[in-house]
Image (cartoon, rainbow, N blue to C red; front, side, top):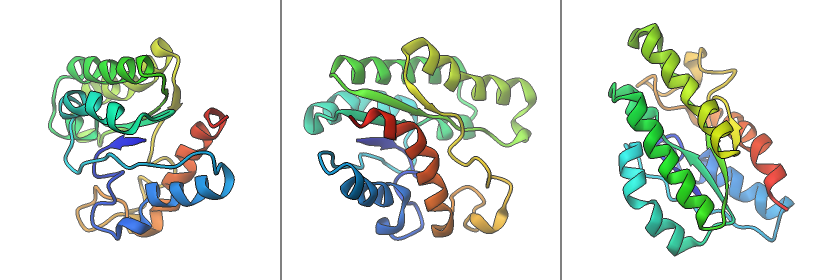
Length: 178
């Protein structure tokens, strides 16, 4: 189950071309015992995710949860400690439900100030270490500085960037698919 925000919900592009749909195709080919459910919602924050994770876990009973949340918290300047608490809650609930977790990290533009951006970025590896989860350090790694791979809002990746996002996640996810 992919549990994320607009970056996983294929915002601004055809759903079938988003990285989660591409992941579903790859899983079907390479790990046919698994299927992919996209429980992502554009605009989702970690508090929204924490409020709805239990229902999603109960409904889908995932073996693995790819947790891709926090970007909207950061863009809104919400407290990093609250984001960490919410992500921790979602990781704990996923693990209690028997799911392995892949935590997907994010970085913020520098205009949020060094103290906030560093604390935000550090939250993901801290949580991955604390809860012993797999980690994708940065979903937009290697292309965040390439404007041609982003939509006009400069936030959401284009269709051309989706395979790159898939590769970041696949590296961390593949070892968990037994």
